[in-house]
Image 1 (tube, one colour):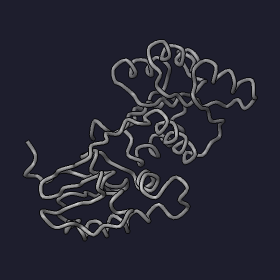
Image 2 (cartoon, rainbow, N blue to C red):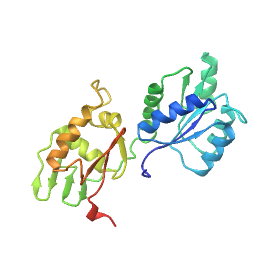
Image 3 (cartoon, rainbow, N blue to C red):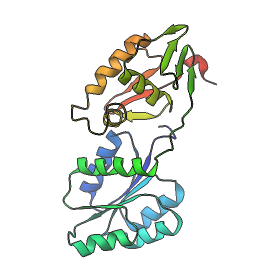
Image 4 (cartoon, helix red, strand yellow):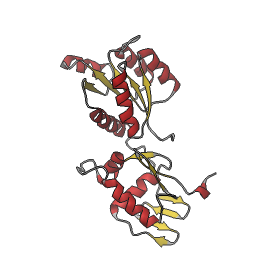
Amino acid sequence: MTTSTRRILVVEDEKSIRDAVTAYLEKEGYWVTPAADGLAALDAFDKHPYDLVVLDLMLPKMSGEQVCAEIRDTSDVPIIMLTAKGEEEDRIAGLEIGADDYLVKPFSPRELVARVRALLRRAHVGEEPQRDRLEYGELSIDVAAHKAFLGTEELDLTASEFKLLTTIARYPGRVYSRMELVEKVLGYDFEGYERTIDSHVKNLRAKLRDDPKTPTYIYTVHGVGYRFEPPKSDEV
């Protein structure tokens, strides 16, 4: 697991919900820490930095409202509240004590994942490095000129292939889920199947002469997506 992978704290006392949410988020490539009560949540939050918190309101030992207040004393980390209460006043109260979003139970884990992605995008806008040139062994990417080279050979990449390569090469070691790559490469409004990205990866690998069985640059993370790694000879 890489340090660039987003960390998420999931606080939920119902084991079935906690396990389902954890499984869906981990499938997307997030590093997830589950907590079953309020005190365990604060203990985990004190030990590690988190990029987002999924927080149930009805918790043993300490309520979700109290946990939220404690977190807000020291952090502006995005918080999604889970609540069995659907009344407007309850939703407003949750937002007023510091939550950034909320979901009413029962909810779809896929919807929760979408909310998580949206909040993380807003929280980290402008964070990605904008180097004009990326160099990894024989591979050279001139971002400003929109060109990529393998040695002295310029690669004939489509716009989508170049964007895919640039996206994953900016964060070597980071695992990108297929859906995340679809959003970054094809756009948030793309309505096709998320495995469309597999075709772009296959074409890009062919042009990089990158064998998926013994990859030099693009590695498959089974059940999740892909990550970019520098050639072994570049490692220190």
